Length: 293
Length: 221
Image 1 (tube, each protein chain N blue to C red):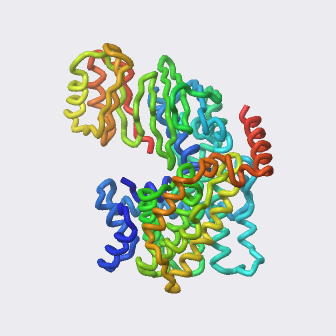
Image 2: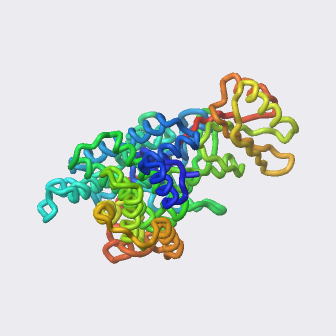
Image 3: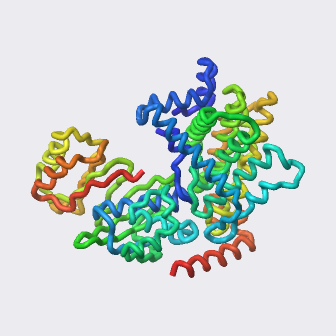
């Protein structure tokens, strides 16, 4: 797979194909799986994403600790200024997948379980408002995979290594490119959408209460989806970001490497270290230990 | 090399690719080492597995792996109850394992009839694992390939005999590692294969003298 999004975009533009097609071709060339196997695996991922959104929107799930659950259903009947738009559907779908994840349901790590709500949130939120064929969604997933692969090589996809900017931030960048592809934008526009999205998630810390993938992770998937929508909207309108996308990704890696260990999934800083964060974690973890014995 | 399907995947039961999917795979590997369902298992959780494992279902994920469930199997949620029903006695303890270990590490001691095995494995993130110790032998196994494991006395010709048994059936070796506790002592051999070892090759390997604990472990990812 590619190690530079700038190079991948140049190649796709030269060949007049989408980033998704480029990614599928590159993956098949690596020879581990045939094109048919790759597309079948992505089709399965799409089906699992759909069923996770559907399951989460029912609203009856509670997380293992009991701290989260039921919020996706609230967003499925919104009353705010954006009710009825793609925006609230993206928030609802992202929350739904993360609530399923927190309740030990089946999801697709994309790129990780902790950031698994953003990509299906954006893609299925967009698909709810326009007719989209599955083949287009599968190509969009391949686009997201290409972006994620570049981030994995140039920076990181692990909260323990790079904070939440490497999980929900990376997922938002992936979703931005996938969304642009789904809406017919060019590879160049997709790359600007990634840059415009990820400049907004730089520095985001990983600070889960008690170390559990619950608070704030569930909500950060929704706000990650919102960030991707902002990037998509700006890029499609013709906004360009002056720093090339590879350098934005490198910056994310550099910030991650210099991030204090308290902000890298250890529950030692951020929201996890607030008085309430500590109290909730203690109560819930004690309760869980009791359950196990 | 990063694959598209490493990024969009795996399909898994939540909540954590490291604490749930990876933990399940360590359990699956332990099951493979005794070639079937254990009757008893003792699980020692180390580091972050001990600290936040309960909230991530790490115990359920490992129990599920011991029952033969893969990371995307929804039965992981009820695996502790299913283990009890299946006659698998399983105990968990928090432990500080000796030596240097990744923060997400578990040691599992399993027994099935006369077969016992001790396996230490770490979950590296995104569901990938590394088995670092089998029965006191230091190893490095990912479980991403069908794996052939055996212990051999320290005599010449073992590798030649085993690799020719595999080659006769066209079974291709991807990687191979040998490690021993001390000079002249037994050595553990680990072969990662492109395809599972064929029954004919396994039969020929079982006929080689000086080998014990011969196991063919299916890929777990």
